[in-house]
Image (cartoon, rainbow, N blue to C red; front, side, top):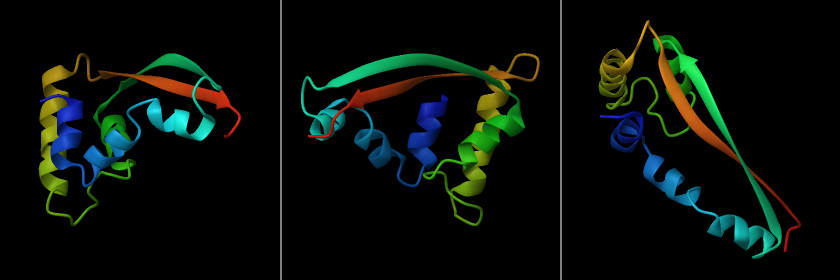
Length: 104
């Protein structure tokens, strides 16, 4: 399992959030086609388990303590971390997208 699969399996509404923010079509609806400039910036973090756990738990779609999926999700996160960690850290790569334009 990788992190994305963990989110899809345990996230309370991750699928809906991911679909809502996955494409540039939504941005084009706001700004109008050809009226937006896009910039993309690669980012990376090195996280220990507590940092990775904190990142996950700060997400709106992560089940909260007391939810039936909370403990299984943390167990899966620990297994994922243990399988991928090197010297107590995992790499967390992502991309920041910036959109600039006038609203239609």
